[in-house]
Image (cartoon, rainbow, N blue to C red; front, side, top):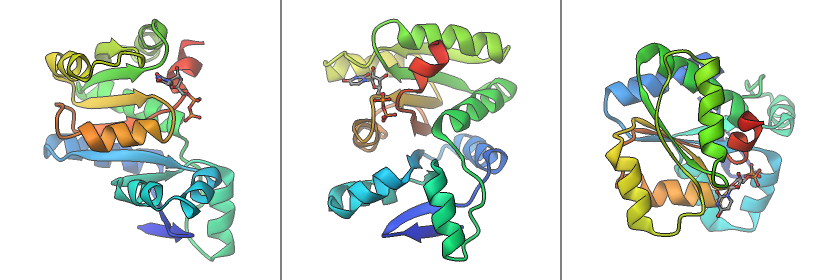
Length: 192
Ligand code: UDP
């Protein structure tokens, strides 16, 4: 199900397929992490072997960026539709609301995650966003304790890329969530 572009893997799933795999991961208590791939990240990874390994270590690389779709087409590949980071986050919120899965939002300037949470609660009735934390808290034990206290199953990390992806791989075993997604500036966009 994965295609490779200059050494970087990308999955061929649509929003619904990936959302149902993520819910299965939670139900199986399997840790998984999603990273959005665009041509900029693929080019950066050409000069940065550690970044390439990090991107490939994700469970699901989503084709965020029309350049990936064009590259797949040129290679005779099967990836036909974009799956953007923000729309995947919104799909996951929709499915999590329906399935009663607990979400935590980490990152962004103080107040932003909280404002985005209120918007998501309007958009997805029944959604359980159990906590938020801004992305400028530097005390690691405070970050881990704040997340774990709320026992989330899904964690959205908005610290910018690739900081958020390094944060996820270095901390995913230390916190309760099963599903992790780096979402860049999405909290800023959602909060308006
Ligand atoms: N950010 C953060 N902590 C930091 C640095 C950045 O929480 O130490 C947040 C910032 O407030 C913004 C997001 O990370 O909400 C980065 O968004 P950007 O659009 O730059 O990320 P990209 O989508 O380009 O990776």
